[in-house]
Length: 298
Image (tube, rainbow, N blue to C red):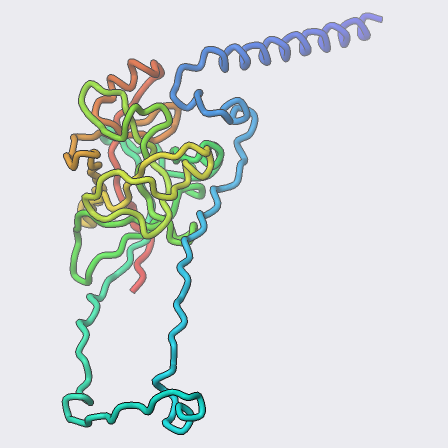
């Protein structure tokens, strides 16, 4: 009898603890003040952390014009079709001279990962798996197997470059870039403004260097349905130091000072992290990026 009562009490205690934990989780959700809490899918994120990676956006297709080959008909065929005869062809050495096209500059492609650092310490790698797949913008992970593999192509002999693209081979060559945040009043970053950027994938060909924000196809817009302006050719890299910097361009063509930071594991950037924190009062950690080389492709 005593044993039976003991088991009953244990089951009741476990049930009470489970109920308390569930209530704590729900209360945590209701008290969440991070920016990511505003995402429509956030209520599902606390329950699911095994979401698949974001699928690549479809590349825009351009119809190939069909060339008319009328001029290739013989004179006999042209007469049969009621067409005029071809004009006589003047032959000269110049007509047969081969045209010279500039040779493309050979490049080397470097594969690796984006290490996110705060001071001397690494806080993880950029990832597009798990929670990031649901919200449509990228986060960090300490599991290197979940790190986002990226590629950087530089001319042979070069160890640094500015205004370059960083590609994502696993997503069909999508480009790593920035897109304006969900609650932004404009795509412009500035001191004193909470306006912010998400790190995400942008469909090629992306933006030109120093281009102003444009509504390019991107993972965040595709996932959330919120049309937001983006930029991709914003990166400066140095293979010797591993540094990876970026520069956002405002809609008036100005280039504001921008800082990358984390909140709730998501990667953001803006012109004033303290203003962002004032609107979303959850801990913010300023960070910078380093390229971790994995392999070299000739």
